[in-house]
Length: 347
Ligand code: 5AD
Image (tube, rainbow, N blue to C red; front, side):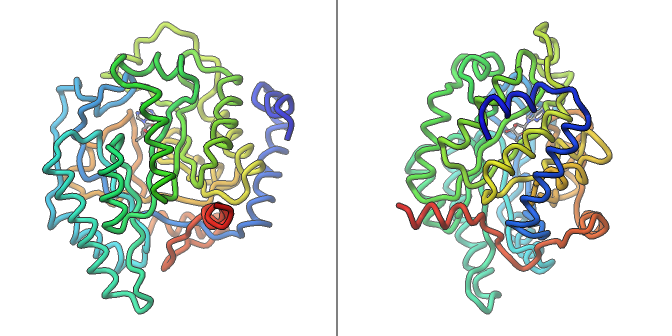
């Protein structure tokens, strides 16, 4: 698709044109990837965060929040439980970690989960482990990889350096984020990034630039969701204009990314599901093929409050919803993006 055509879709207010775009994306997904929706059991292991992103409800300066950290046994037991439920892929997520002792312990936790689930797996592969722990050093990324993690999610939030700077404090650097993404790739992770959509000051040209960035980075996975203002975060009081409808523009971006990058994995994000009752359905229609059920323990779930109204869809209800929409939940599989394997062959 030509950049002008992409921009035309992003700028268009025409409902019919949007429907047609989503239909095309759904057809691409069905033809190239089938109707299987991969699942990642999400464990939000801690809401502690040393960063201060201006949009986020768990930012360091947000003091009206009880901070938690799941302990080693809780994480390992939960991972084993998730495995037994038939989810063969988990994601461990937290805020930005600055405690080296806890990072070292987490490496060991990852190794333990791999060892224990490999023993339970006739094929010896064990749980697929995705990490989303923020910006770490190359050595730390390597340690986690050696311990058995194979995917890493690190959103760029916006690939435009000025827009990135406008939603982050000065000491959080765009260049460092980019550096991390390339380090993750060179270590051999399946790498995912993504953006928020509908940010103050963000326009269709920014989204076009994001799409280009995803291609340049040669991503394996994408997580895109609407920006949902959090009243306790500073961006809530931004005076900049909002040009994009967060919900509709997210659906358009999903569709455009699916059409232009058929072999990557793309999530129907929790934010998308939280923003609209039909978020899951519309996200899958627009070409998403991954869902991340939130399996964080009940007693701390409310504390992982990234934005207002975060929906915690999980378990049987979510599987039933996926089936009711005519898709097949991808249980008992890692569900890698074919893009990753193609990428390795061409190295
Ligand atoms: N609205 C939508 N998404 C948000 N995130 C953080 N805060 C918000 C918000 N207010 C997203 C960011 C981050 C991911 C974990 O959650 O994109 O990378």
